[in-house]
Image (cartoon, rainbow, N blue to C red; front, side, top):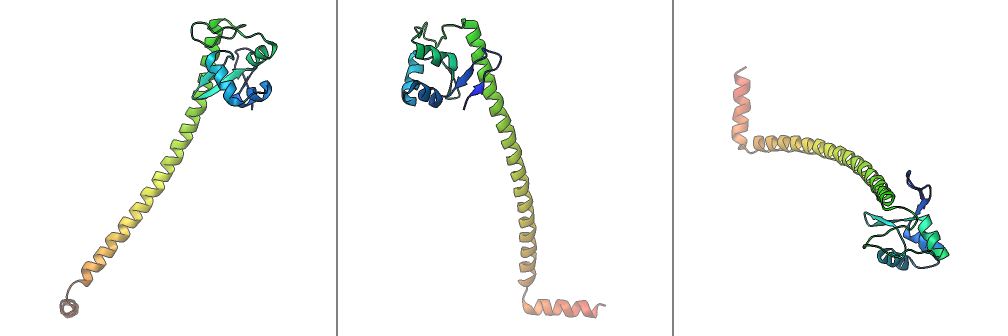
Length: 153
């Protein structure tokens, strides 16, 4: 599945699976190339976003050397690459934030239902305890209590 890039370059980002299919290589090879710098991409939350231009450059033989330990696209200045990385990171964080908000709402709802059930069970338990306490008096006390109540009327 490809996703439109923010305002960064007009191209599309690819997953490692899509790049592997396009390069006719395994996903493991693509990840290895990303780590070595042979293929440029941005890793956010253990997910690689690979610009389509980077795959095209690799297919056409125009790979750049890895400079200063970073993934650098040959046709994009460093500042633009940083902006693109931040846009991708922002997109992922926004999606993750939205998911977490939804999950919190679901968990709050489940907690409220659990609280309601606990309250009902507590009331039932209290009622059962009152019934048991009432039945624990010896039969003759209950009988005399009933007679005393009826005589007092």
